[in-house]
Length: 367
Image 1: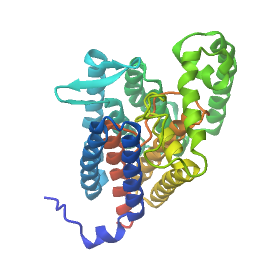
Image 2: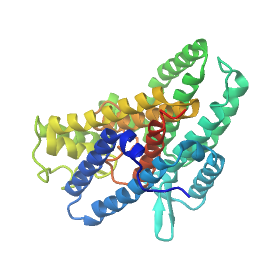
Image 3: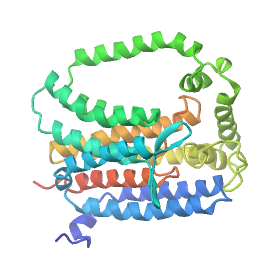
C-alpha cells in the first residue's frame, strides 16, 4: 500500500517553486472572485473548497508513479466519453452552451476532466509509436481517439472547449513526427479557409460571427455583442499602472461586465491591481509553463515527455485565449483562466493534470 507521507526524496525533488506559484495564483483568484461578487460569498467559499480538494488530489497523484495512471487511461477515457454523452442527453444549457451536468447535489463541466482523460489516452497510444515521420494509419487512429470527445463537446456548442482539444492534439502530433510538408499544407488550408470565411463572417448575423465582429470589425457588430468587450476594455484601462486597490473596482461588482467571476476574472485583476498585478500573474503562469517544459525535456521516458508537453500546450492555450479575449485580441469564447477563474471543474481538472506533471518531474532521476 502506498504511503502518503512525504519521503526525504519527495521533499528534495518536488517542484516547490511551481507549487508556491500555483497556490499564489489560486489565492489571487479567490480575492478577485470576492471582489467581483461581494454579495455572493458562496462563490469564493466554494472556490476554496474546490481548491482544498484539488490540492489533495494533486498531492496524491504526484505521489503515484504516472505510469500507473496510464494503465487505467482507457477506463478514464471511457468514463469521460460517458459523461460527455450524459451532458448532451440530460445536461443544462447555460449561455447557449450545453456543457453543464447536474446529478443530485453534484454539478460540473465534464469537458474539463474529459480533456485530461483524452490527453492521457492519446499519450498512451502515441508513446508506443516509434515510426517517424508518422504514417496515415497512426494519425487516423490518434485522430479517432481525439475526435470522439471533441465532437461531443462541439455538439454541445462549446466552441472554446472544442478548440482547446485541438491545442494538445496538435502538440502531440508535432512532437511525434508529423511531416513538415503536412504541417505546411495544414497551415495553408487554415489561412485559405480564414480568407474565404472573412466576407461570410462579416455578412453573417449568427452568434459566433457577431462575437468575432465585435473584436475585429466592431462597426459591423450589433451593439449588444460589443457591450461585454467594451466594458472589459474600460475596466482594464481604468486600472492604470497599479490599479484601484483590492475591493475598489466598479465594473465587476456593479454588474457592468457579465461573467466577471469566471471567464472574465482577469478584468477584475486589471481594474484592481493594474498593470503591475496583471504582469505578476502572467509572470507566474510563464514560470509554471517554463518549469513544465523543463520537466518534459528531463522526463525519464517518452510517456512523461508527451504528457507534460501536451498539457503545457493546453495550459498555454487557456491562458492565451482567456487573457486575449479580455484585452480585445481574441473573440469571447467562454474559456476559464486556469487556477483563477471560478469553477470547481476547472480547478479540479487543472490540479489533477498538474499533479501528473509534477509526478513526471519528481521521477526524472529514476532509471
